[in-house]
Length: 560
View 1 (cartoon, one colour):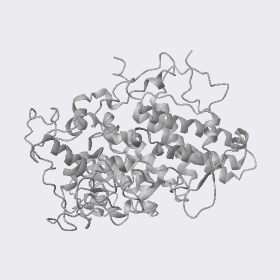
View 2 (cartoon, one colour):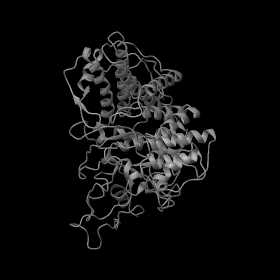
View 3 (tube, rainbow, N blue to C red):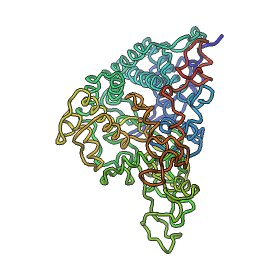
View 4 (spheres, rainbow, N blue to C red):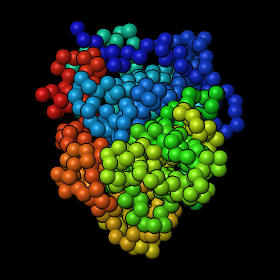
């Protein structure tokens, strides 16, 4: 008999990482405790609070996982249309040599287990809060609201990834632990639970809270995205513009400030809180995303300004680079979000022919070099990288770094509002202000902040292009492409590196490439050839579906 043990997150493992608040200046502070009992956690006000903070810890632990060179959290980025999965463990999923069948999709289990674990703990907290005594009603309501946000976010994430999911609002108990799950939950029921939970969170959370805590703005932002998935344009507009118009949150003045410091700025709606040697463990995200620009290049050393040390496992492809370079005044690729020009900065080893501050141009490692080895060296050492995950105070020579993780921010809210207004016919004009409640006014708020010229016309492709420039490597692109029905086409046309639509193998001229800017040779673009329409839903990993009932439906396409 197969049992429903996807939800069987034992209390012992939960308590092992359960956390309680302590006092600290302005961020969510958590201190480990091992003396909790089940009674304490679910029957006392202090225990309920520790249970809620444990939800934040579960979400944070997803980023702390160093398996596969720390790449699991950014697999979602490797599978979109904006990156070159050059090598390392992450390339297995980016190039789709793995993640294509239930048998070879073990990393997907990290997503599956993380979010089902959060759902189960949220269920337990919500259920316990109904009967707990001796707790202030306002405090209790706030605890429930946070748990409902986490449940909504987790259910929504699983639905977007796996489609065929089972959802329950009952916590795991000895009485139901052996229940056999035989079928997925209907889509209508999934959306009802998500929206009901978010409505409760919006009603009962304040606009601001201590840094890292879920607030009303984060809940409205998420509900706007849910509405976009359902093509409920008025609701998406209502929720997104409520955040924009409230006045609490504002775009920071320049992209250089968005990821600066602790990220707890006026643009941030929700950021996971980490503090070296206090809260959370370091991650290797930056190591995956930045090239190895200092190693083997005399006159170059790793610095904070250039994004620290990486090995170029997942970097910007030519499609994204071209989008960012379309406007020469766009600052996002000039060292704020991304960096494409590395400079000589080490006076101790600089060649006589170079000067400090001069752009590094290697004599042989070039993007359009004749030798394959030289082209590969360019992508390892000098291709454009993403700096969003490198901390201002990080040690640039280290592989692991500790930095808060951006989960939701206002720039995306503006793009949600712009899309909703586009679909409603509220186009506006190029002169519209950011608060004009028009598609053009809202998208141009994001463009103007980056120094790019305002657009005067808008289509869904305009928004997709701007979303790529602004939010690449933040785990948002894959979902938007799937939601708009463009994931398959965009992956086939742009994944990896090369001429748009070129399906030939690495370094081949069979697709019309001639190793020029206009027609670059294909490189690490295997996903273009492997991608199938049904792969817009991830395979439920064999280890997970084997724990469900014998007739539980795998996603279409993966049973053959």
